[in-house]
Length: 106
Image (cartoon, rainbow, N blue to C red):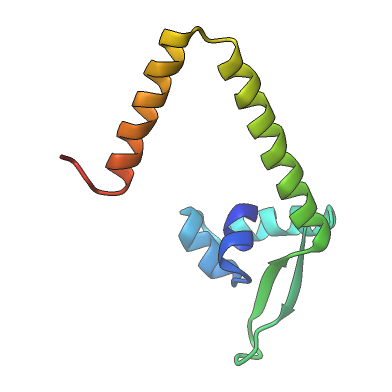
C-alpha cells in the first residue's frame, strides 16, 4: 500500500481497499496503524468534504526508499553467489518474464 501511495499519490480508504483487494474496514485498521507509526497522514479531499485522502508522509517515503535499497542490496549479493551459468539462466528467465509482463508472447 505504501508503494501504491508513492507511485499513484493520495487516495481514499475505499480506493486503497479496492486496489489492495481488502475490505474497507480492514484497510482502515491498516491505515490507522501506519498513521500511528507516522508513515501516512490524512488530508481533506479537494472536492468532497466528506472524504479524506491518505498520503505518504516524509517518513513514509524515507522508509519506502530504505526498504527498496535493502532489497536491491540483498538481491545483488545473492546474485553474486551464483556461478556464470546460473546467472545466465537467471537473466534469461528475467527477460522472458519481462516479455510476458509487457504482453509480448512471441
